Length: 222
Length: 301
Ligand SMILES: Nc1ncnc2c1ncn2[C@@H]1O[C@H](COP(=O)(O)OP(=O)(O)OP(=O)(O)O)[C@@H](O)[C@H]1O
Ligand SMILES: [Mg+2]
Image 1 (cartoon, rainbow over the protein chains, first blue to last red):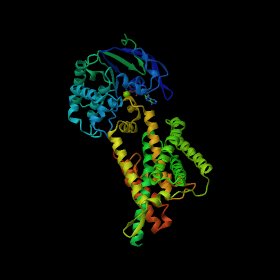
Image 2 (image 1 turned 30 degrees about the vertical axis):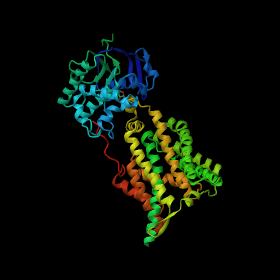
Image 3 (image 1 turned 90 degrees about the vertical axis):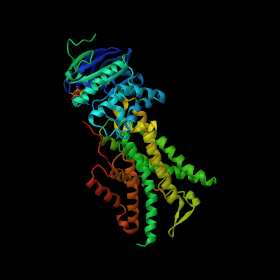
Image 4 (image 1 turned 135 degrees about the vertical axis):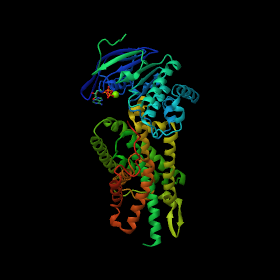
């Protein structure tokens, strides 16, 4: 469903991604593992249209996403949970969750259904719905960011270092949510970046290793 | 100072605070979304004023009823907001979006200078005014002093309505939430499907409209001369800086504070009139460098 072909990205004159080629299939969870500064965030930002590629293609259903502005991703069913969460502080948690769907002008019944399905995947959100987006701990923010990505990401979800900075108990809950996600939305394609592969346990169906902007030789890209 | 003078100063300050708030609100709204302090906002105020006066003079000649004169003020602000605001955003600000803030400031300052000359070209340098609507709306008695209904009631009412309407819109409407999201984080807002460019244009036009509305509402109460835009932009900078950039309720309270203080100074120590807003601003910024009303940022890791 998502194919990266020879993706090359320069940021501020230095080359950050160098000829990344990979495939992520429907119903798979792909881990992208790499050290700090390896280019994981840049890879996801490029897929999202937030960083400009110098060369290469990002094919989604055989359409090159690089020809589309960043804000078109949501409409294609692509969700994104950024590394630093960014939950809007003047909105409640529930409003934060609903926002990407409201932007797409989905009808309320549809949004209600999505919210319900997200709450079965991330039940921890139930108790926080009325809370202000400014009153969340870092870990809770990660949960909300996951929920928000799932609200709009019906086909592909990109999670940037979700386990980073989570206390062990929260990390376990987050992992359980990802396992439940497989059951609730079997067709979803999930891409997770992480610097510490062991945090991902056995969740990924495929692991790619990113090293200084290039995928390690031998990484399965079938 | 006699009680009469005090009441008069309070009424002046109250009315002026309404205008100041409208202009400052536009400035702070645009800064929130675009991250640009728009010096040309002062030109929008001036053009709003001159356009409103032009329409009012014409409508008065045609013996138009009072409501038409009032509608002409809003129409002038809309016209200036959409046309000049649109030209500024699409032609200029959009092109310097990711550039150095100093360059952005210079570019809007250049636009301001161009508009200032344009305004002299169109309306000349002699005072320009049409006070018809103020006299038609009459006066009222306030503890023994007489004051115009237009200044004492209409201007503050418009400011209050704009304030409440904007709070509601940002909190509850789809467009408003998108403006909030872009203000907070443009990139993540984009990832959530928000067209930040479009939201930027809409916000800029809304902010430009508010600046022009300030000018249009002021027009019937004063004589317009070259330089009105400069006075207003400088004063609204001090409101926005004192309140904290992007603070709407803060701007509301600060505009009232600065408006009142300025007008008290006019009556008690006229030589201080010009300095008072800055004294307040400096005092506040010494104690709270990010402004009176800036709350702690949402937690980051
Ligand atoms: N906006 C930018 N301008 C210039 N260089 C950048 C920019 N963003 C990232 N880089 C550089 O690109 C490289 C990859 O950064 P990136 O954030 O993608 O890494 P990462 O794998 O996500 O790291 P981390 O694990 O710390 O999140 C780094 O060397 C970084 O310094
Ligand atoms: Mg990163």
